[in-house]
Length: 335
Image 1 (cartoon, rainbow, N blue to C red):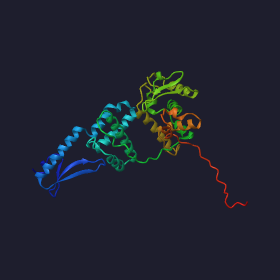
Image 2 (image 1 turned 90 degrees about the vertical axis):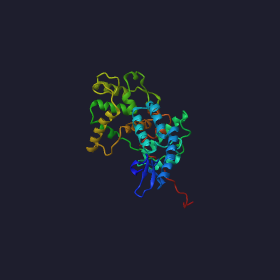
Image 3 (image 1 turned 90 degrees about the horizontal axis):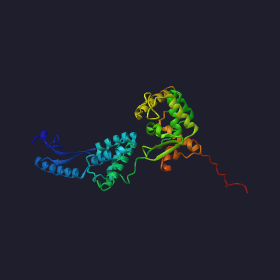
């Protein structure tokens, strides 16, 4: 049998040595197993490896766990979360999809975290892997979660706080409708996806009633004069009756990408004109809302719809400077 007609995954180098190509391991490194120079013996070992692979496949692979999660549980999440996690799932499949579901070990997960080019992306991907395994454990698909106990890569908390001047500078570049939407986003602290999905029927005299697409928590944002004013301006500028509060000129629902594209263009203009010195994300408006709410003595955790104070602290960008009175020295004083 010539090297060109070797069985699948069997390779032969220029020195006449046969190898089995295992593909990439959990760290992304390509793995080859030496089978020797004797073709007959190499084929026997190849058959053994193939049989082991078939047995592993019958028991399930990491890819099968990820497929189960994507089909059964991902649709329960918000639009943005689904889109992000599909990217994470695709990256995970490339590196470890071929590994047996119960053969994946914590050291494989740790290796992935260390070798991935983007430490933050690696954290998000492994978090998704952990969730997928947790769901699979509930139906007996796997025996344990290899992500448990594996320390994630360190991340620097985002500290960008949008000043009032910066907010107003960017806001001034938009038309009156978008200005009202920016005010609405700041007043309510709503996630962009929740804001774009908000329907008129969810608003009454009491306030805004909605269920967070990300956490599933029910929230009520009480009516205030400022909130009523922002809602009135939004409706006045886009009188076309659409199902959602934030809609296109034709009354259609905005996608997250479509709305974000409008926002990013104007924000870039503000940066190029020197109206702001540092760029900021739409999501930073939510952080500004939480920070200012805390400064005003309001409950930022309730405003953002978080279940724990720790979740809210991630969003707080305190403007306060901690003051301390220095110690008066006692040593060497005259008695």
